[in-house]
Image (tube, rainbow, N blue to C red):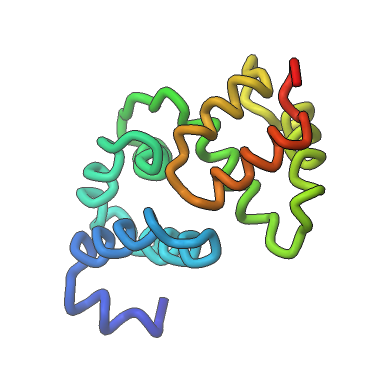
Length: 150
């Protein structure tokens, strides 16, 4: 955060968070998580940018998650759990061959998946994820027959 300090000061916390969140929405996973981490480090002074993000479907799950952690009431999005789960998977998949993705997906569904959500429902939720990496993830799982009924 220290290296970004002059950039943040020039924009203010809300302006910097807006730019970071806009960038993160279309970035590849490594860059997205870095931008989100910097935006989170801006603290509550940047809350307005997170509120704006929370109004969006899909990627807005990050805004809703941030607001909930900050103690603000916020309605959950329809596929927030699926979106955030896929994002967690994307964060940890660097360097893994695509063949491992369905195995990881099924294991995660068994041990840490959203309560009451089937693999089919989660894969359907992933379909709403607009990122290229999420679509690739879903495609690998479907191609390998991870979804029940395949």
